[in-house]
Image (cartoon, rainbow, N blue to C red; front, side):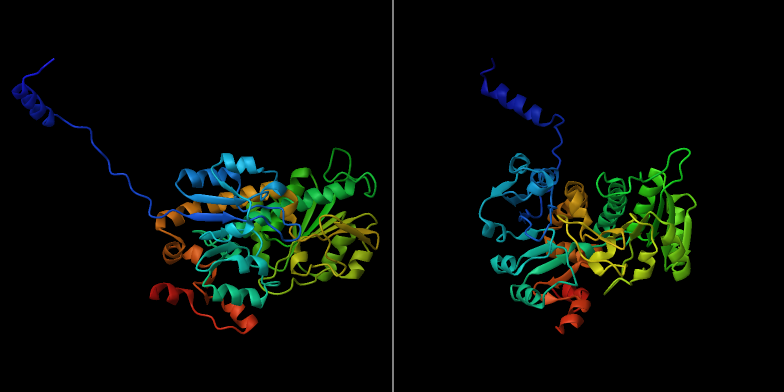
Length: 406
C-alpha cells in the first residue's frame, strides 16, 4: 500500500491524463404527462382508451397514468393488469377528471364536463350528430383543449382511428352475418362461404370504403361470391387494386342493385356520408324480394342507415325480422369485439402520447404536428371547428391563426 503523499499526487496526475470513459449527455424529458382514463359510461360502450401494455410503455417513459377502477372490465382487463403496468388505480371518479389529459372513447357527458377543473386537454370521439351545444359551451368556458380522435390524421393524410375501426367493423360484419345465417334456432342453416360441389353463399356489399373493403376481404376469405356497389367508380377501382383480384363491381344503379339483392344471402350496408345522413339506397320493395332467411347487416346505422327497413337495435337485442329477412342494425360494432378495438386504439395513441411528452405537452404537439392539429375542435376555450360553429351558431376561429398567435 502506497502511503507517500508525493507519490500519490504523481499517480493521480498521471491517471487524469489517461483516456477516460466518455460520458454521453442524456436528453432530459421535456414534460411528464398526467393522463386520466375514466370508465366508459355511455350505453354499451365496452372499449377502453388504453390497454395495460400501452400504459406500461407510458409509465416506463416517466409519465403518470391514472385509471378509474373497472375501466377495462368490459374488455377483459382487470385493475390488477393496470396496476402491474404501473398505473394508479383510482376509486374516486372525480380525481380522474382532475388530470391534465383526460383520454376516453365516447364523448364526455354533462356530468363528466362538470367534474373537469379547467385548462385541461380532452381526447375523445366527436359525434357530430349527438354533440349537445351546452357541452361545447361548458368546455369552452373551462378553457379546455378538446381533440376529436376520429379527425386526427397521420403523415399520409389518413384518419388512422376511423380506418382502424372501419377495418374491424367490416371484418366483424361478415362474421356476424355468418353467425346469423347458420344459427341453430333462427338461421337458414347455411354456411357463409363455399365448399366443393355446393354453390357458394352470395354476398352483396354496398360501399367500397374501408368497411366495405374489409368486408370483401373477409367474405372472399371464407369462399363467398361477392358483389360490390358504390357511387364512386374510383373507389371501386381502388378496392379491386387493393384486394389484388377481380370481384363483381358496379356503380349504384337501382335495377342492377335490386337484381343482386334478390339473389343475395347476405347484404352489408357500408356507405358513409361525409356529413349528415347516409343515403338510403335499398328500398323496402327490394327487401321484400329477398329470399326468406337472408341477412341484412347495416353498418351505416349510426348515420341513419342505407336500408329503408333499418331500425336501430343494440347488443342485447341485436336483430329483428322484417319481410322474413333478418336485420342486424347495431351502432358501434367495434364494441362487440372491444378487446381487439381497444388494442387498435392503443396502438395508434401510444406513439402520439409519447411524442406529446417529448414535445413538452399538448399545446406544443398541436403547434408542430399538423395531423394532430386537424383533430382539435376547441383550443384553450376557443371553438375552432367550422362545422360545429355553423351547426350551433357559435363563433369559431381558425386553429392555425390561434396557434401562431400563442
